Amino acid sequence: MPVKTKPSFVPGLRVAMLVAALLAAVPVLLGGATASAAQPRTRVILNGDAVPVSFNDGDSFRVLGGTYSGAQARLAGFNTLESHGPVHQWGGWSTKELYVLAKLATKHGRRGIWTCTSDGKTDTYGRMLTFCPDLAESLIRAGLAHVMTIDDAPGNPELIEAQREAQRARRGMWGHGIPPFVLTSLHSVEEDTTGSGTYNRLVSSEDGHSVKWKHTDRYEECATICHIVYTVDEAKLDAVTDAVAADPEVADIVGKLSREDLRQAVLEFAKWRYVTRAIAKARRLELEAYLQAKADAGAFGTQSSAKGSCVVHVPFERRFGGGRAVCLR
Image (tube, rainbow, N blue to C red; front, side):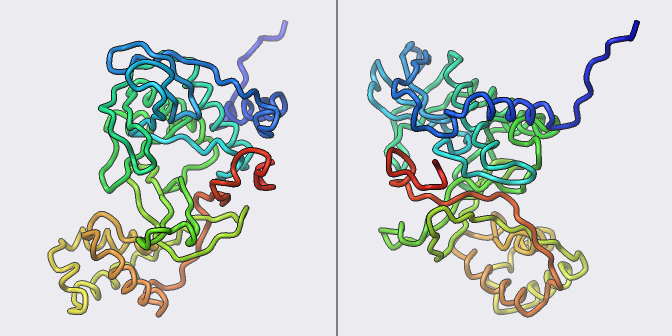
C-alpha cells in the first residue's frame, strides 16, 4: 500500500493557492457592484466599553454605538492595502491577487473581538485615531498588513518582529516578493489645494517608517506609478561620499554627520533617490538636488533600475459608485 505523504509547499504557494481559489470563487470581491450595502457588525472593546463597529477595510471602522458613535476610526501603527480596487502590485503578484489580500484583511477584522483605545483625536482626514494592538499584531503576523508610522520613527518593536516573522515565512503579501518600500498612497499634482506641495507615501518594509516622495507630476487616471529601485556600485558610493564630505557647498547640511551616517544617506539616495532620516527635514530637498546633479553627471556609475512597489492611480471621487474608473470595474 502506498504511503501517504503531506504535500510539499514552496514559500508563498499556500497564499497563492488561497488567492487563486478566492479569485475563482468570489468574483464579487473584484467587481464591487453587486456587493451588499449592509455592512456586518463587529464587537470592539473601545476604552473598556463593548461597542458595535463596521469595518470599512482592515485598518478602519465606523463606530456604531457608545461615546464615539458615528466616528470614523483610523487604526494607527499599521496599514492594510487599498480595498477600493485592484491597484497594488509588486514582485510576482498581480493587482487582483493583492486586492484579494486587501479584502481578506477586512474579513479578518470583522471576524474578531478586538481591544482598542482612543482619546478622540483625529488625523488630517478627520478620522479618529485608534489603537488596536491585538488586531494590528494579528493582521501583520498573517501578512495581511504592514507596520506603518507617518514619520521617520520606526514602528512598534513587537509589530516589527511580527512582520519580520511573516516575511521570513513569505506569508500573505510577502509571498511573492518584499519591496524595500510599500507605496501606500498617490497624489497627483492637481490635488495640492494648499500650495504646500504634493507627495506620495512610501512605507519601509523593514521598520515601517514613512518617506514622503515629493513631486510635481500629474498622473492620468488608471496610470501605474512605481517606486524605482537602483543598483549601487560600492566603490562609486564611497567616492561620492568622500566628495560630499569635502564639498563646502553642502558643509552646513552634512558637516555634523559621522562618515558612517553620511555614507548611509548617500546610499539611500543612490538606491531610492531619497534622502531620509540622517538629514534634517528642512534640508533634505537641497541635498537630494545636489546628489541628483551628481547622479546625472555619472558619479554613481551606470545604475540599472527595477520596479519596486507600484500603485494604479485613481482619484478619490472615481473610486466608488457607478462612476468608478474603468480600471476598477
